[in-house]
Image (cartoon, rainbow, N blue to C red; front, top):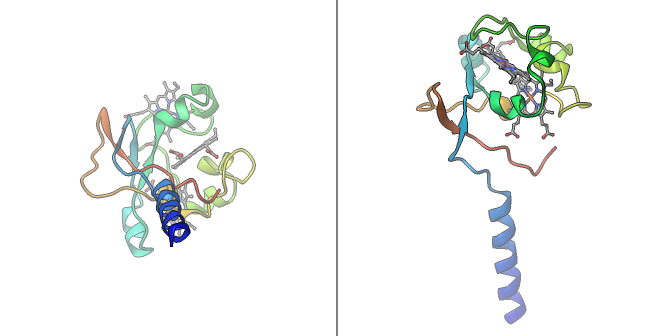
Length: 129
Ligand code: HEC
Ligand code: HEC
Ligand code: HEC
């Protein structure tokens, strides 16, 4: 009986650790949704690009302007390019960062999250890499 109670507690703690954390503020996230219509059709959310997350890991010139023009909305990003190792796929290729098969890690925008200096960004569930 006691052992069983412990097991339930342990399981609870485990589930808690695996829960995605939703409400952390992240500075300067960018919503990418030029392809909104196609994304609706494919039933994926708009893309929430965690700019700051990348900025603290890479020098600006890694991305600007060889990969991305330094202007919001100026880049024509699509899934074919990403799968071909262009744009986000330069890194999200299973070598530098995880492969672009985890759709909802990028397609994570939720209504109510507006672009701005500070906004809420969905944290990645660390379970699968
Ligand atoms: C991993 C790649 C990456 C890195 C590293 C990166 N950026 Fe960006 N940046 C982007 C993307 C993607 C966009 C959005 C482009 C778009 O909307 O088409 C962007 C947009 C911008 C914009 C335009 C924002 C706006 O509202 O018009 C500025 C300014 C910018 N970045 C500055 C920087 C600076 C400064 C650094 C270094 C401290 C940096 N970026 C590092 C990928 C990157
Ligand atoms: C590394 C980040 C990333 C991942 C992972 C990713 N996407 Fe995307 N996806 C994007 C970006 C960025 C765009 C361009 C959004 C825009 O500018 O409107 C996009 C665009 C799209 C579009 C618009 C039409 C097109 O062909 O570009 C669809 C549909 C789409 N993604 C579906 C998916 C599906 C399904 C998956 C999982 C198999 C996936 N995406 C995984 C970043 C990602
Ligand atoms: C210069 C390399 C590079 C480019 C280009 C790049 N990423 Fe990333 N990205 C990374 C790395 C490295 C990580 C961390 C991977 C890890 O934790 O295993 C990451 C993580 C992420 C995460 C998860 C952030 C978190 O909180 O864990 C998202 C979402 C993401 N990238 C989206 C994108 C999108 C969308 C694009 C294109 C607009 C993009 N990335 C372009 C290198 C890049």
